[in-house]
Image (tube, rainbow, N blue to C red; front, side, top):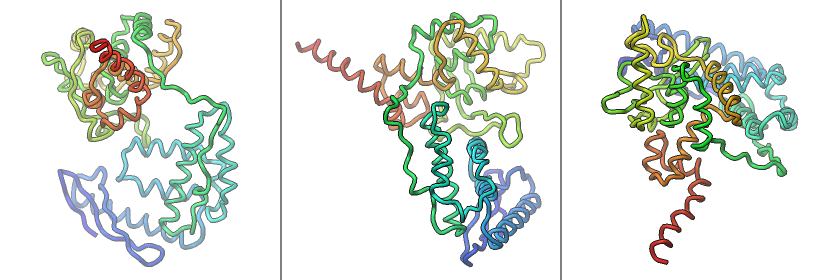
Length: 367
């Protein structure tokens, strides 16, 4: 048992005894602790909870709900809050299995349960996501000697042979113009948010986490991305966390259109009575809520007569625009905060389509 301070944060470290008598190292952040004694108390509570869970396992097989609680408890402090939120959402869909003892759950039981989602109301990707999360749970149970085998491992991904693969959704430049022309210009906050999503290719959480002070440089015409916002996680209305990956830290330039819109918006922001100098760029005291963003989007899409796409697809729209106009893949990946491999994997079909354009260049020169 030990508490250590590193980079201004307290961590706990030590060993715990497993059910089979062996030991496992633990090393986790003492979340919310500012003093050493608080970190020591955090460790005491952690060990007490661990030993309580161990006794529960020893006393007999646990239910799926108890397994979920153990799984989440194990991940806290080691995973981002947004990841935990996704886990909790997926596990909530498994309520019909909550009371079943995990050592009595058979492969067919799980297969039948997942099959209840395999209908026209659910995307195939969602059905297989359910399988993935159940697989994670039972792998955790096997690893911690709660059961001998994972009943999900024998279940392959579900397939729908007659279902056409859903194409990536995005707005073409023409559709974008229709959308933004239909958006009320006097709704300056949301108007600027959607322009930033489309012209910058930023993730939704990155845009909503922008700060008035330090993140937008109008002189250099750049936006700095160093954080993201997640909403309704662990009972909080919102939390600010580091961006998705190490590649997501970046400073990117604004095109002229976006720079003009941002200048007008910041002028409006600074003239608002009581506007905090270091508040959220969009929302001031608290970030704009996602449900409000979705509601504004659908109104404008309906007015423009456009099909619905996800808010995240404005990012895809930006990437598609760059690819179709021949931007360098490394430059695209840097702008999006992805690796080159991720860009090639996500947009491979678009790069294939532009090959004809590249061949045309050579043909035009030499034919």
